[in-house]
Image (cartoon, rainbow, N blue to C red; front, side, top):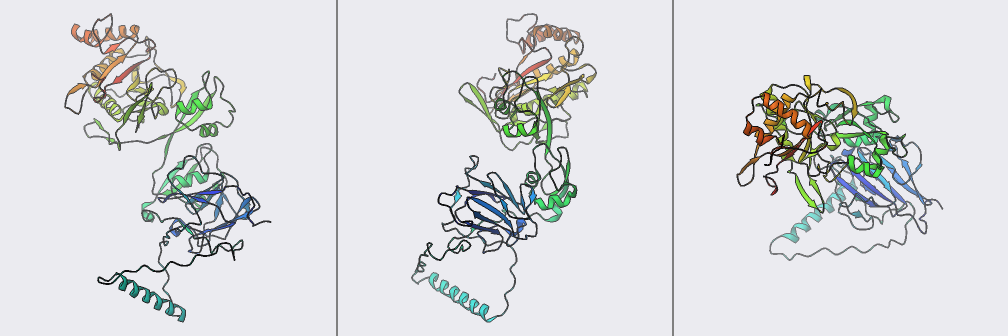
Length: 538
């Protein structure tokens, strides 16, 4: 019968997320679950989350739970749609209650390990929802209640007064959970109380109007969760977006959080690519890749895939035009088997110092990126160069091998395009974040400027923890034919024989040089930076 527990019910649970209060996993082991801010609800959410006293109810019908709206002030949303009538719930459905989001799941998601599962039958310490209670009136019942509260207070004082024996109060008798329970009688189940926010809700003046551009596969509920606002508020601010808006739609949001910056990038599918391998190489979840490209059932060679990468700017340049970047954590490179991996990699973002070809492959160590940007700023100052400098591949977000590269695994190796004549790369070659074309070495490269840039890289220094000064750049790879053009530019600039022998391998040097031959480095130079704590460095 509807409303009764089946003999073998599915193992349903709720994953409850709320602003600044973490996550809770709640096992659904009862036929009815009342959700709201009132103390008599089964799941008590703080009223500051925009939750009504009795917001909504989950009721078991057969083997399915039904969502019922209870005329809440801000409404209950199921998968971004306002719930106005009883609706069946399915695995993965998202329920928005104020700024809280509850995900209805058949089993615990593998990504959630920290929040322990909450047994509704186990005792739970209750947290009183914040807010100013109404002042009690002087009715006889309330006066009697106040009297007993006073008696309890005096008793407590007597128990803890020095010199008196402290006695524990008697345990309450156990309740019989097998009798007197109906489908809606939940008196035998203690409530689950989600803690209030760690910090008080944002004051209205701290919230600012921002714009958010929607990407494919992103729901209104996703946007609301990003900025800690309710779905009802988001729809109120964007009355034309009652239904899911088209990708590219700009949404107006009032939030204490900054606007999320994203870059749209493209990737041309190569032989052997699959959704799984592309997810690893591009640093994008497989499900997200599929949402970004709904018309691509299976990636085929030559397909151009679209994806989005979050951009997180860091630091700011100093007044001396030498960038000083403030990074929250230091990057660490580990060697696990044959491939290294990076912890706390830093993403290089486009700036006045450089352009970035592919944001998905622009992760390096904090030391490497700081030295790179120092070199770029120094070169621009000494050469008075205001043109483009394109940074190609660095590493993936967690390091490791990707694509055709033999290196670019530890956040130390950076591809830098050769500098273009006139300061601008030719257009018409869309790839990842740019449509710029790699310069042809014979006709489009400014070799005089490229030589000056390499001189800056050669002079760059770093210091290890013991105070020893080391070259900041370990090696630069450039194909031999291009070394010849670099050699000629250096000669025109007046470089001496010792300097040429120290820096350029061409025509052939028996001693280690800074610039060395490596096949395929025709349009760009491969720069390996020296980590002062790496024993292999220097």
